Every structure is written in structure tokens, then in C-alpha cells.
Length: 314
Image (cartoon, rainbow, N blue to C red; front, side, top):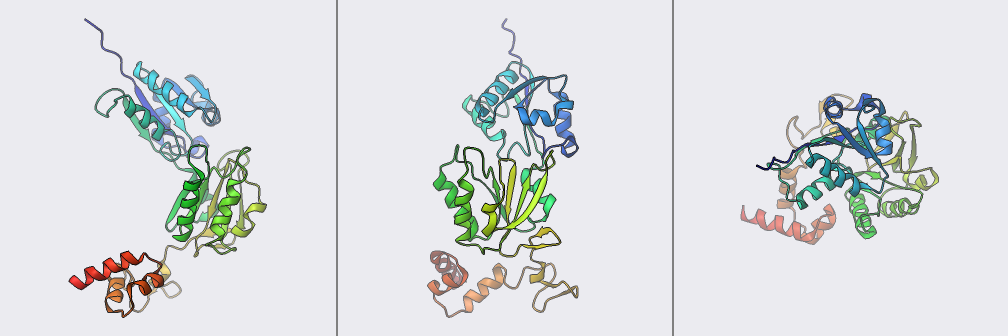
């Protein structure tokens, strides 16, 4: 009788920003559970004290495919493998590529090796914590690395995010071989953002050499930026006070923050008077055309026309 093939386990571990103190309890226990640790050399150094007695496989930054392939092969051979990423493994980390490879092999969650994704604090949230509260309203993350993504795709995302007034986090802003992408991003953003828009630069968050800088979008190009830098670009409401960056959540739209009372016409626990229902009522009673309303609200004319058509049926 043929012996069954041993099936191991693959742990996709997000290490968080750097030090062991910022790892989750589950991430630490996953490292303990694994007999083999695979990752970029920099990331393995972050947890060196935890993996001294483990088999370690270190690789360079551009060897992600080799890393994942080896991790899957070792797990299929019966090993318990921790494939580590900084931050969260599902955010610009190794989890996505791992599932791509697994799906190509015919793997399913109910067959083959066991796979567990273990979340970690992302660079985005970790860096934001060092400079105040810049992410208190809607935000997005965009990587400027064009190693795998065509530049026109990146440029369209920058343009759309700027137009939508998101707070924007720029990952992979610059490297020794990619010096101009951050300059092009600055040009695209300045086309729709004020020159004095606040920007935070966070270097080597929670690692040796950590430092933060505040500047403006107009002067971004004058500051040192590298691969260990995360760039946080504020929206139209973001402000800087006492060296901290803050993006208001919008409470001032409903409450008088000085008096601690609700603004006339608003109700606590209820949508704003300019929320969806209130806005549609404004549209219903307006004499403006769809084109005029589209310009007023900076929305697609066909969307406004559809709203008007639906309201006419009510």
C-alpha cells in the first residue's frame, strides 16, 4: 500500500512594522510553531531572537516567486513553514502571490496543505500613528513601484485619488533605481491639490533610524525619500498643529465642537441633512438640469440623470 503524502502547514505571517513588541500574539505563536522560516533577509533580522533555532531561508527583495515556491514545496513535504512579510502579509506582502501559486496547483482550502494568513499592523497604520491621526477619514494606498505595475495604471490611480480627496499613502516611493516616480506623483497630485497640502514622511518606522518629517506637497521633492519611507499626503481638510497631522472625521459638520451641541438642522445618531436622503431631496426640488447638477456636485452627468429618473418614479 502506498503511504499517504505528508501534508504540512503554510503560515503567512505579518510581522508588523518592526520590533517584536509590535507583533501580534498569534504572529509570535506562529513563529514558534513553524520549523522553517522563509523571508527577505531584512525581515528575518527583525525577529532574529525568535528564530535562532529554526531553519532559515533568506532571499533578496526581487526573489518573491522563489520564496513562495519553496515555501509551498516544503509545506507539501510535511513541514510547517512560516513565510514572513513586514507589515501585513496581505498588503503588498506575500499572501497574494502565495494564493496565486496555490490556485495554479489546484489547491483548495479543503484539500492539500493547511494555509493560515496571520494579520499584522500595516506600514500605513504604523506610520500614521507616529505623526498623529492623518487617517481619521477616507484614505487609500498606492504603490509607486513600477516593477510589476505599468506606470499609466499608477498615474490613473494617483489622478483619481487626488480628485476624490482621499488621504493618500504612497508605498515604495523611491529606490536607487527608481528616482523619478515620486516626482511624477507630485506633479499629478499638485494638479488637483493645494501646494500647502500637509505631507508626512515617515522613515524606518519602529526600526533603527526612525524619524518623521512634516512638509507640504509643493516642497516634497526637496526632502530625502527612500524605500524605507512612507509618504502620507493629506486631503483638503488635513491640518498640522503642534507637530501632529490630523484629518478631521467630519464631526464639525454636525456638532458645534466648542459648545458640545448639535448644529441646527442636524440630529445626533442620524445621517447629515446633506446625506443621501437629504441630498436626493435637494435634487428632487431643484430646477437645475442634470448637466448643471453634475457640475455643481462634481459627479457624472449620467449618474445624476439616473437619480432624477428614479426620483421621478417615486
